[in-house]
Length: 574
Ligand code: GLC
Image (cartoon, rainbow, N blue to C red; front, top):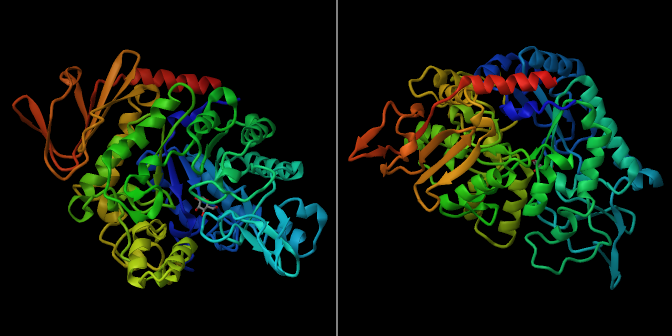
């Protein structure tokens, strides 16, 4: 049944709120997405992951689902979705749905029945515990912290009970120990698979299984309580069950968003023989300019850390499980505004270098909307312009500890998820072509100097570079199956690696610096074709080459035949 189509795939992530607003009401919508499918296809994309389109009260912008089998009105109807699916398939693009299964919205009928109607059956759908009484006062059952700050427990008014929420208090954690919950989830997966969708991205999946009995966390964990809810003891069993009862009956793909998994677990989740997930996201390299993964805390960019984060999973997963390649998503600032990059001077060069060194690696490329034209961070001027609840929670926390407001805001602006969530810039007309002029749901700085129309017609087009890059990946199976061998690990400017497969070697080289850097190419490269270059040429001096700021090069001799063989193999299984 499984063809492993995802190994050849290039995935584009759409954040529906902000992609394209066809009915001009301020919210992106399905009709808008359909109108841009050719644009996505032409980039070289073969699958689209949609951030949640389901009904939601939007406390966490779609990640608090109140109906898993219906489309939210602001995006359209189920009939619109069916058309979207058909239009994607017509263009040869697969559809990946976001599945938020660790928690539901508190407006989900299950939660309402559990809490408002006190239905004992539905109480078992959630994690509800009696609080602790001390000196006539009620305290949460444990000292666990929510990922989004504050206690992970919310009091149920009029009772002595609390429910668990590892994110916003409007996102109540499901009780995966309850077989009925798992049955419901399998029904949801099958509902979408029967419609014809091709796979899922599981939101924060490695929090499904909790550790019982619950106790206070006395360890020095990065988040209080995390030993009780990260990589819990039944994680592997739960994933296998979903696979056995649902996914394995379809030619599907799963990618899991994990939350600080252990190295061992990260591998077990994706090992092919385990039949749990096809891949997970690896974000460690994205923490190379913040302190210990805390996005709001600036640290000077550390290229060695970036390289370790990027290459370790390629090495660890090689030939065992599948990998993913990521630079951005809806939870991170724009990549050209990070990693010590001066995007005002080197936006094109850095955007293309980042793409080159990332997407020629081992794994499926994931591209976030706007990244393909080199969109940069938004010039937010005050916290009120930001919509993400996390920006507000952390700002309130900081100012609550008497940090000056301007300083707190500087921290937030550094790591805010809001940067990625502003409306997509299509052209230089009103609201950058997102819609016909209605005020968009999310404030933005009205800087539309970078937009699709301008980018594709520019001499220095990030979009066209992406197109070329994605074509190169299709020219040789080595870019899919090749082993990654890192070079120059200790260099503070160079990022370089080989992809090796069936006697062929490809070489990828990037100057992750605004300083010219000379480099001696390995001997095996000398006779090779130059496949990728984000400058017109490259300089040679005394047997060395001189890389320009953020220059990226790739060399090799592709055998298109090898790729055709692989495709044929995939089709045969089909
Ligand atoms: C994931 C999503 C994020 C959301 C969180 C809670 O990390 O990517 O946007 O806030 O889960 O669902």
